[in-house]
Image 1 (cartoon, rainbow, N blue to C red):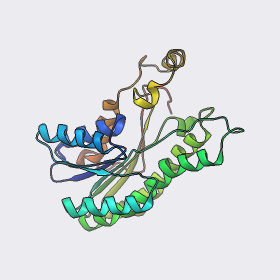
Image 2: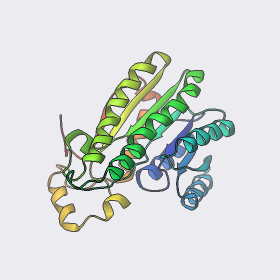
Image 3: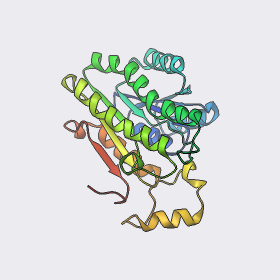
Length: 247
């Protein structure tokens, strides 16, 4: 699945799934632009990729800021010449029952998880059109498919990503650009680390494979969808959930 000659941009790359995706894409030969709010963590990631013989550059980015998105993608293209793989991974949670959910928490989650993906796609697609080759991969969630109590904002944002994925796939397919989504289930990350053991054990009982997933499980799926082996797959939602949701 060589990605040599390609340039990837990964948002939310400072930790968890995003970090694993950046490492895997670099391992497969892509030059990787890593973007997130934490410059220090990004610098460590770039150093790790460089030490392994890869190419990477860090871009401090708050995806809730439209101007920062435009500037980051402009700078990435100026440095590497193009972006032809985009991984929209950045995401946050602001959990609360809908009756108590503050409008600010709804807006923040939709802005970060969904609107940012639209803005990143909008800015990156011209480079893909120029190359007549592109891979857009949106990281959604099993809860965007099945819902989750206390996460109306998060589930709505992730379900929205699925609709966005299908719409973009139809818009850009004729130009040799694919757009797919990956729906992780329960993955061991900083976001899930704060959950109590009782909740985790209950969740594991719902997973046929009997374990939580690792960020590397998602990264492997991203590498596949970014490769030429997945050239005839578009508008698809690839579940990486251990069987938590089927069908």
